[in-house]
Amino acid sequence: MTTQEKLMTVEEFESQYIGLPYELVEGVVVEIMPPGIEHGGIARRTGARMGDFVDAHHLGEVVVESGFRLSNITMRAPDVWFISKAKLDAMNDRRRFGAFAPDLAVEVISPDDRANEVQAKVQMFLDAGTAIVWVMYPALRQVFVHRSDHTVRVFSDADTLDGGDLLPGFQVAVADLFPPPDNKQE
Amino acid sequence: MTTQEKLMTVEEFEARYQGQPYELVEGRIVEVSPTVSKHGKITGRVAHHLWLYLDENPIGDIFGAEAGFRLAPDTVRAPDAAFVGDAKLELEEDEDKYFPFPPDLAVEVVSPGDRADDIQAKINLYIKAGTPLLWVMYSKPPYVAVYELGKPMRTVAIDGVLDGGDVLPGLQLAVAKLYPPARKRTRKS
Image (cartoon, rainbow over all chains, first blue to last red; front, side, top):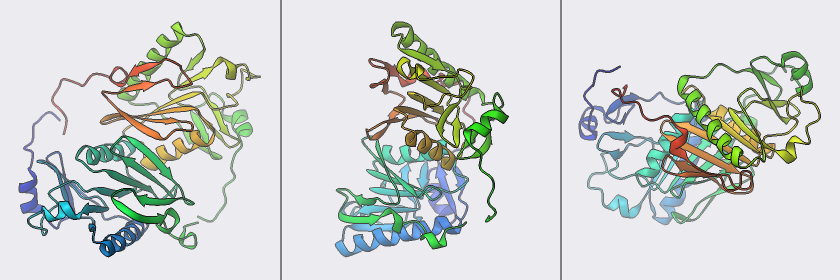
C-alpha cells in the first residue's frame, strides 16, 4: 500500500482506546487477541511471584497487561512489567498509561507469534530504556533474558531467574513459572 | 494427542528423502519452502562476504541452503548458509551423505512467517549439537543474534560488526553489508 494513512498519537489513542484490547504501534492501532490458557497461566504465575516480592519490599509496581508509552506514537502492553518506585512517583496520574518504559518487561510467547516481531518488540523496549526483558517460551519451557547491553541468557527448567540489580534478592525457579508437569498437554 | 507417531532416524530419512525439499526435525519430516525475496537477498550477501574472506583465508568451505547437516540421530537441518573448516571436512567419509556433524558456522535468516517458537527450537538444536558459531538474522528491524559456544548470546544491530571468533579468525563483517539497502518507495503500512 502506498497511501499514507494518518498516524495516531498516544494521546489520541489514550482518549479513544484506553481499556480496550488494542496497542498503538508506530501510530497504527493494533488489536490484541486474548491469549490462551497456557499463556495466561504463565503470565499470572510470573506476575504473582514478582508482584509479591515487589510489594513486600516496596520497590515499585508490578502490573499485567497495562499500557505504557514507548514514544509519541507507540503504546505497548507487555504481559507483565515492573516499574521502579522512583519512576512511579514521577507519574502524575496512575489511571493512565505508564509515562515511561518499564524497568523490566515480560513477554510470553503465543503459538502464532512471529520471530521477527518478537525480536522487534524486545529491541523496542530496550531502546526505550527497559533494562531487562524476559521472553518466555512455553513450548520450550525456557526464558530468554535480554539486557540493555545486548547480551541474552537462556534459562531452562532447572534454572533460577533473578531480577538483577532491579529486584535485589528476588529469585524464582523457571519450573515454577510454567505449568506444572501434570498440567502439561500430552 | 496421545497417539504416538513413528519417528524417523536420519538413516531412514536419508534413504527416502535425500535431494527433496525436507528437513528432519526430532524425527519428524518438515517441508522446506522456497524463501521470499528479502530472505534470498540476505543469504546471498552473507555467502558472498564469507567467500571474500575464504579467498584470502582458505581454511574451509561455504555451503548454501541445500546442504544437510546431521545435528542429532533424529535431526537433519539445512542452514541458509554454513561454513565448515578443513579439519572437520576431513572427518567426512561419504560425500553422498549428509554431513555427519554440525557446521562450524550456521547462518539462519528469519522469514516473516517464521514462528518464534520454531526459530527458538531450531536454535536449541544447533546449540545442543555443539555448533561453535550460529548467526540468526532477523530482518525487521535488522538484528543478528550471535550464539558462540561457551559465551553469552548477544545481539548485534545494523551499525554493529560480526566477529568470526575462533571459527573464522580475523573476520570482521559489518552487519549493514548483509542486509539489502532500504527500499526508497513509500513504506507500506
